[in-house]
Each structure stands twice: as C-alpha cells, then as structure tokens.
Image: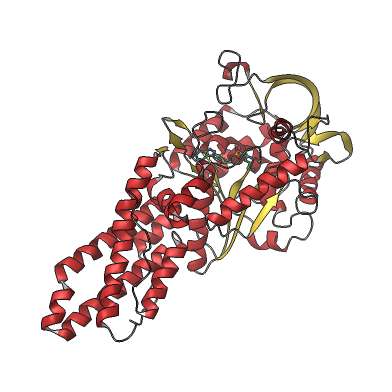
Length: 474
Ligand code: MSP
C-alpha cells in the first residue's frame, strides 16, 4: 500500500448530531496514518467532511426548530472544533451542500453513468429507513421497526432512477479476488465477496423532489434529486476537483478509504460500480474498521451510550485521547471503552509511563550534560513501519510502549545517577545514550501524539526537563 502520492479519506459524517467518540475514532486513525506517511516523505492528501444532503439532517433541524442552514452551520462548526481539538491534520473538509466544490463533480459523475446507459427510471415500492438513508426489506425489521434505529420505516411508492449495480458485480468480484482492489482486513474481504457472489440488485439512485428532501437535482430532470449515497460517495473525487479543476484528481486518485464495517457495502460494491461505469480507476483499498462499543453495544446516539470526545479532551488533553484511540481501540475488532479503563490507561501509560520517563531522562541530562545531545534522524524501525502501513496503529503504539518500558528498565539497571558519582565520563555516556533512545522513541510518537512529541524534542534540544507532560489523575 505504498506509493509516492498518498490519498486518504474518512467517511463524511451526517451533521444531524454532535460527533461521538466512534466518529472521532476513524478520523484519528486516518490522522495518525496520514501523519506517518508525511513523515516517510509521501506526498499526502487527507480528506474528511460532512454528508449534508440527508433527510436525517432536515429532521434534526426541524426538531431543533431552526432552519436547516442555521442548523448545519452550527453543527458543522462543532465538527471542525472537535477535529481541531483532536489536532486532525486534514487537508480539506468537504461539505456536500457546497455548490462550488461538490455539486459540479457529482453532476458530471451522474452524467457519465447516464451516458454509459446505467441509469433507468422505474416505479418502485419499498421501505425507506431514514436512519440508514437506505431502503431496507421486510425481513430486516424487528417488530415492524428497524432494529438499528428503532423507527418504523416509511412506506414509499415512487418513480426513481435506478443504477445498474448488477452489471458490475462480477468485475468488482474479480478485482477484489485478484487483489487489484484491496479490502482490508481479510475477514471483510470474504464478507463482501460472498455478497457479490450472491449477486447484487440494482439500486435506487434518486428520489422525487419533495419538501422533506434536499439534494442535488438530477441533471435534465428537475423533478428528482440524487439519492444521498450516490451524492455522498462522489465526495471522494469531487473534493479533488473532479468535474471542475481536476489537478488534484489527476495527482491523487486512486486513494484509500477508511470506513466503518456498517458501510462496507456502499464502499466495496456501490462506489466501485459507479467508478467502473464512469470509466474511472477503482480505489486502491477500502480499510474497514470495527466499532467502539460501550456497555456491550455499539456506541450510537440511538442507543444513548455515547462518550463525548470533547469532554474527554477537556479532562485529559488532546494527546491523551489520541493515545487511547490509537493504542487501546483495536482497528479490526470491536473494542469496549469505559471511563475507568481510560483513566487507568492514562495513569499507567502516560503519567507513569511516557511522562515519567521523559522527565527522568531529561532531568539527568539537564543536571549532568553541559550541552544538548545532538540527535539524528533514523528511519522508522520495520516493525513500527509495517504496522502503520497496515493501519494497525494499535500495534505501532504497542511497539513504542514496549520500547518505553525497556528504556525505563535501562535507567534502573544502568543506574547513571550512581555511576556518575564514581566515573563521571561513563555516567555521561550512559545519559547520552538514554537521550538518544528517548529521541528515537519520540520520532515514532510524532504521528500519534504530535504535541507531546514536539515538547519532548524541544526539551532534548534545550537540554532541559520538559514541563509535566501528563499530570496524574486521581
Ligand atoms: N454519511 C455516511 C457516510 C458516507 S461516506 C461517503 C455515514 N455517516 S455517519 O456519521 O453515520 O458515520 C460515519 C462513520 O462513523 C462510519 O464509518 C461509521 O462506521 C462510524 N461510526 C459510527 N459509530 C461508530 C462507533 N461506535 N465506532 C466506530 N465507528 C463508528 O455513515
């Protein structure tokens, strides 16, 4: 998964409510990987954004008693605030309501599908779940309601444009099987392959324009608006200027999409089919992460078990939240989070672990060395790099914390504070080595904990003890 130009995307989020820790996870995961790639010299472009032409947004605005525009400004402002608090280094934030940045590309793409003969109109009757922003079937229901959202789907009978998804399922299957189009991890690859083997039905790609629907008008048919997923998926290329000024598109496409397992089908079947229909290259990979769960259930507003990442940042700091998400959430298995575990991990790994280690070493250096140690940049160790390349940021972080532990043991075993009293030169040599190893660790911390990493390298360069990096929490 490596080349010179590296394009990485998160899903675009529905601005119908504040983002919770689950949403913060995918963004942080991508941020760590994007920062890592920049450090290896890859020209990196990192995209995130909001999925605004959704019925859920209109419903939420109505409930809040404000106009959709005002509602969106407020909530999208909160998204940006969260991403800034988490120190997310995205190169662009795309909004699908943006008529300049997004609409021209979405319209061009629609026209390509149409020109390929892949859109047709048909009368359709189905059950639309607004929470899913998708039609669901009778057999998905539990007690007449959608089990994920607890709401009764709307019965609709309407004329829609349909997209010929069925035409492309074999080609997509072949490209996944050959590895040309990667689905990560293997288990998700098998999941989507079995779905593709069953064959997929054509999908509704537009809805009649009514007062409770917003969306991009279908070119040449003002009575219809594009289905929200058709419009949303195209963000990955409209943001690069597809359909207007496509320099970025030429440079960065194809990219890698990181998405949650609940939206695998949209990204590994519908999106590639759209690209094939338009004669565009498929994504390099879709990386599919698992869920953060709380109290045994997927964290979601509907369940009511959300953890607010802003509250966590306020209490523990940006890097503590980034640390927890990177190290203690497993990308490819569901992971439970509790406040107790968060605090225990903070105290053990950050306050007593990294914070204490950096303070001990730099206290020794400041006391016994007359000038700063000249540290040199070394390539990332293979184990760390391999984990990062595979999006296994938890393993990359585990590797770093193993080195932290070893270094801690070294201080105790080498006892430079004792040695220095008997043999000053030997003592100084030990301390210099400790600073070198701290610097090597610090470089690996840069993509994960950018602020802390900066503070440690500043302390090394000034030959002084850093401020208290992670005060203990009781
Ligand atoms: N708008 C669509 C995506 C369109 S992409 C072209 C959407 N939005 S969402 O806001 O509902 O979800 C965004 C992402 O957050 C999804 O990848 C979803 O899997 C992820 N998560 C939502 N809850 C989550 C957890 N509890 N844990 C981890 N990720 C979670 O779907």
